[in-house]
Image (cartoon, rainbow, N blue to C red):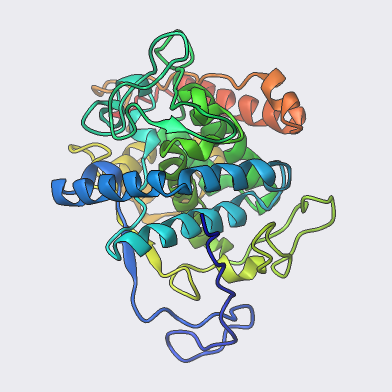
Length: 383
């Protein structure tokens, strides 16, 4: 198999409105394509994507990306390379897919939609990605990768092994992720909070190939990291567009000029969607809750007591919605349910992968404190 060529970042350019941004050295994209939520794909799009994925498996691309992720695992987890490397990694995967058909755009899976009972998600049914593995080797028998033989790190059936006896744990609610996006002041806070919450639990709960360093064997990896990238972009759009701080993989202070492992391109080259090679955008999510849009969720959150709102949703607390909806109008009597505690990430797993137990414990404690605060305030979620 020929290794894919890595395109270098473009030279200094002007922004779309003709003004030079002091930190932006990428030209504006001439056209933008859209990454959609998986279940919003049309049947025509899904059939095309399935054919592309089968061709990529045939030609060894699943093997190649599983190898890359394994080879660079220690440099791209547990430090601030986590977001930029995976953005570039998913883009490279998408670029290969476009070589088979230019209409390919890597979708995302909004896992927060399914957080209460992820094992029952429509995404994990036979018409889509298939479910849990079966038999002694937990080989997946249905979905788009059914019966595949993966060749990295050695020949084996494509596998999944859902945690919690096949039922999976509860994941992270949309409200918690929204809260975390609002509260995180810098990359040094944002990265471990996401890496050791939603990111980690999806990898572990899906299990099988997905819980190993060679996790790109499972296409859920790409769906998952596209969603993680979408959340990073939301955080960037909350006043953190060029925020890149915290540790690099070698312990030094990271910066926009630090190179991403393997790609040897500066982090600044992937920071702004719509510029350089990052010629994509994210579609709004039309399917998280068909009877509940984002503004409805914001109005429900805004009914929290003012002190709770200020602590957990500081941006919502400052918005006009908080003024329109008095905090005295609590929602304890609505038709929703309390937010449950998310499942835990085993500290043995964290330690075995050379990651910081202190960061994982802090993320776990933060999520539990959030749930406690919502319960005490009488908050009921419609998700």
